[in-house]
Amino acid sequence: MARHALKGSERTSLPGARSVGKADPNERFEVTVLLRRNAADQLQEHVAKIAARDPSAKRLSRAEFAQRHGASPADLAAVRRFAHDFDLHVVHEDAARRSVVLSGTVAKFNAAFGVDLEQFEHDDGTYRGRTGPILLPAELAPMVEGVLGLDDRPVARPHFRPHATAKAPAGTFNPTQLAQLYSYPAGTGAGEAIAIIELGGGYRTTDLTKYFSEVGVAKPKVVAVAVDHAKNRPTGSPNGPDGEVMLDIEVAGSIAPGANIVVYFAPNTDAGFLDAITTAIHDETHKPSVISISWGGPESTWTAQSMTAYDQAFQNAVLMGITVCVASGDSGSSDGVADGADHVDFPASSPHVLACGGTSLKASGSAIAAETVWNDGANGGASGGGISTFFALPSWQSGLKTTRSNNSTAALANRGVPDVAGDADPQTGYHVRVDGSETVFGGTSAVAPLWAALVARINASKGSPIGFINPTLYQNRSALHDITQGNNGDFLSSTGWDACTGLGTPIGTRIAGLF
Image (cartoon, rainbow, N blue to C red):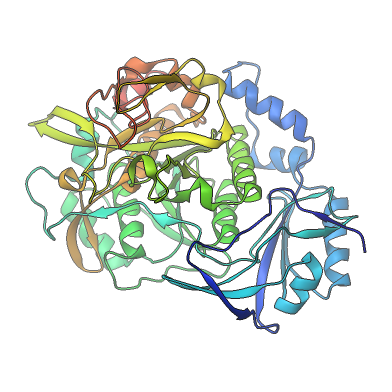
């Protein structure tokens, strides 16, 4: 059988990992096959027109998108035939999401995709993995753009940082106080839905009830959506994934209590993360108008097929008027990679999301007294930011420059991260309640739902979603507080956009006035 390597599917083992033998041939699991989009060239042109703020570029409803750009019946049928030939079971197919979920054993998947799955050990545990490319039968190669889930290594980490003390010290905030400091427009986000992507952990309703009562806002409706068999499953560890889940819900829910908070729980794998994102984007039941993502990992740890697949999903969101807010990471210009080079976090580096960096904020009464780049030094966290090595320079970042910590400047050549920022320093962080305990968290994890809640308020007041806001923000920089003090390691803040805090932090009423 003639086979072709799937472009961008090459994998290497995790640094420090070692193979401990072949994966159990009888182990059963699921894989997501991602198919090409119908009329892909037209879709790209449509996205480009929206990014250029072309008034002729109309948004598509979810149903219209599925009809124009979903997977074709012929491609879906081809995957079904392929599954039958290799004794794999079709669990689910979705034309709008262009995905087919297949179930089978290690032995069957090895044969179907030309891989040799192994079991690896590393410092944080074990994973089922592969090296090299995925090989597709010749007849399937033209239509398949991704095969995710063969490898189940964790792909993302949550971007929150706990305060050194358990209780709420001076200089820390309730989310509602930050909304006031950032001049958010009045409103509750009533009628909107905010999607939150989570890759582990869970929430307890009793904690949410007590928290929102203490903050003094009506408890929002919170709904859990299971993706790929994951579910709302609290671990009981406040500094584990429960901390991320509760931080996201409590920040978004405090500022937009009238919105429905829809939490999509998925496994922390490349397939699970993507399936959660596409489920939220194409969700005809809850219809979120804004998505908050506080998980990610260095671009260097992702395959090209995965980054391309996620970015295509975010392009779909642009076409449907859905704003996607993503944390830029908590490890400064290195993004936690110990090779001495600069790295940016993905999916924040996608040019079709709003990448959210971090600041340290001090208030005086109801006003901001000072705001600088969040950087706790070598032993702490710092706002993630820098230059993508994968994504090209978007048109709305054309002409920008980066300033390095040695004061040298250079024209921005690729996608720059972040776009915007908000308070992320744990020392000036957010009051949260997790697993029965009250504490304070920071990190850019908090900034994604902070911005998502602002978008929900604006959407509700306008009666329609504002959608992809990056081009508008870059053309109206006076709608943000420019952060000009501090660095995130190798990059220095400067007047205008910089690779630490982007365009700056929100002046909410001014941003609302742009739409």
